[in-house]
Length: 285
Image (cartoon, rainbow, N blue to C red; front, side, top):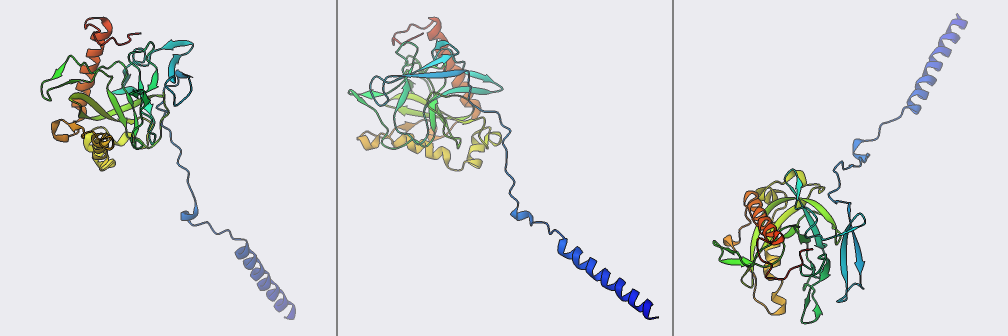
């Protein structure tokens, strides 16, 4: 009997030890809130890497130029980079990265049309404050000063069409990117029509969410109004009047935007082919 009791006591003690060990070795899962999951983007880069740039002359001088190459070949970013990128997308060349103030532009009157800094009265031009978006131009477009818009009673400003890219990332000067056009503002600058296409880089996190003006208002609330006010007012610190906008300051929708782009592309083709005389003496190479 004593032996049986000792055996039973030993069994119970052993079971207690095993249960204690089991509890002490149990791994408690970490709360889900303490686990970080890194989001990895699967979007293809919007930048078109086949185009590279070569800088000549010192920066912030009258001699500075940025030229473009396709492989070993010198190319004009205005003439030799296609406008259309397929699937409703466009190519644009970034002239002024966001949060910078140097007023850079494609020199349409110089051979190979490099990027240079705009000059006024012999001095390099700067905006009075940083621009808040990536800014550039659409290749193979031209706002013909010989064509007057019947609705706005203003003729083109003799430049390629401008792009305001509203994505979150900063582009690089001279970068060639694929963008999705979304809308357009009809700015009137000193009586000349200067279209501002609102677009977004295809690799932006919100690119798939926006396809037209109303989507921009939903996912970038107030952004179009900020663009309008920036371009309306940037000359005021220099003592000039505010720029005006057609269509009652309204940003026109994507369908309208694509019509503007097609029309300015046709104007460009006429200029480049010789069907329209090059009276402005622009560089066509």
